[in-house]
Every structure is written in C-alpha cells, then in structure tokens.
Image (tube, rainbow, N blue to C red; front, side):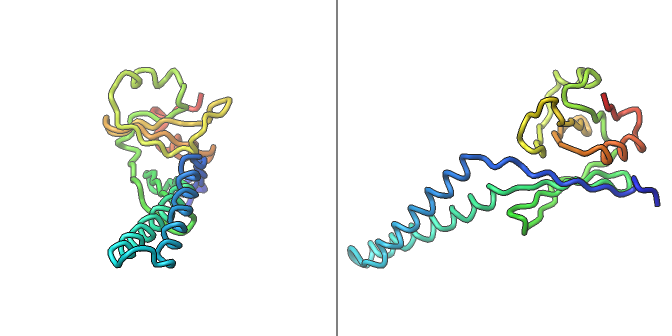
Length: 172
C-alpha cells in the first residue's frame, strides 16, 4: 500500500462572532427565564410559559455552542475524497463523498486553470477554514457539473488526488 493511498487532513473552521454572541445572549435569557420560574411570579400559565422559555433558550444556547466549534476532516481513500463535519469535537457527520472520476477540476481557488468554471452556476459548498490567507491556501474542486467545493487541503492530499487524476489537478 502506497503512502498516498490513504490521506486525511483536519481543518478547524474560524469561529463566527455571531454564534458566540448568540450563545451568550441565549444563556442570559435562559437564566433570566429560570429565575422567573423559580420565583413563581404569576399564575400557573405564567410559570408554564417561563419554563418553556427556559427550555427554548437553553436548547438554542446548546445549538449555538455546537455550531461555534466546527472542524472539517478530508479523507482520500480508494479514489474518493470524503468530507466529514465534526461539531464540538464529539459528533461527526459525513457531509459528502466525491469520486475522482466525476471530478472536473481541482486546483487553487485563484488558478487560471479554473477560469473556464467561474462563469458557470454551481452549488457552492464551503468546507474551508473560513478565512482568506495571503497567499490564498484554499482549493476549489468542481464536481460533476453541479457542485463547487472550497477546501483547505494539505500538500499530501493534493499529491494523492494528483496521483489519480493528473490532468484534472492543478498545483500552481
């Protein structure tokens, strides 16, 4: 088995300030609702409403916490690139499986080799770290005439895809 037959790469997505802000707002609103429930202000209906608000805001804070800590794992194995989304370092979800035979082009996002694909309408799937570095380290993978994946692969992943599809992979 060649060292490029299986390659994996992890990329941590930049935390969005919006999710951090929403998480703290939801926590504060959940605490305020819980205090209103514990003090027993109002009738039974008021207590039920404050309990519902407490549960709702607590659940929203949980969801914001999950979505504020995202990592993507790219794996190359047996002529397939798979992308997994890892939420809060404990739950994993397969986002997509992409075969290299159906790949149209794979290269740096600003490459002149990809100019012919820029005017076409593709569904854009952003699996990158969420930042534009100087120089830009993101790659675009055009897949099956429908999707454009934006990724931050390392050199080993690019080399593994290049080994299988050298005419479709660009390194410039």
